[in-house]
Image (tube, rainbow, N blue to C red; front, side, top):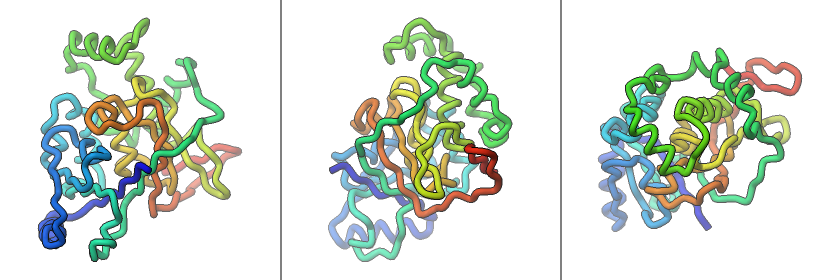
Length: 253
């Protein structure tokens, strides 16, 4: 069964934790490029140093969210077992499990709906300006990306709207599973239509929700071997902070 535990650790504490793990013959593999590498089932223990989030050209724009998040400057540690089993008094930020889940409702090809979600005030105010700036992205690279992903009949600009809408659904959910008095937002596109799913896996986006269902992005499928178009349950200790509720829609601030 696929399972991962993720932890955000401050720099001073990380070196001490790394030493304690080494004393128990547990070595950490560093992700030097793609930060999703530690999510691989083949890597029992891995970590992502703060500098790595801006090193990988392919994901630098997308990962600008990290530098503006509450985790900025912290090291990410990902393990196949809870660190409590290694004698460390640490609670995971998220627990990631592969599950059988199929949403009942999706926007599909409703571009007007997707555009509305991506342009919502809630998403735009929460979004990192650098993430929205795709004007500097080479047009040939955009075309090659669409080809590699097998996406035809659209432009990168339209694909980007879908990517933004997907992130928006973890900030101000339009599509979600009801779980008692709470809700669990989920990815609204297939792997080739979502972007930087690591932001949900590691709670940079969507930390208001105790439960999320996330489809891996192309990078997570390529570099970490996560299953294409399959959902992963992301459980967090965080609880949704319901500020306002209107009808059947939950709005968070």
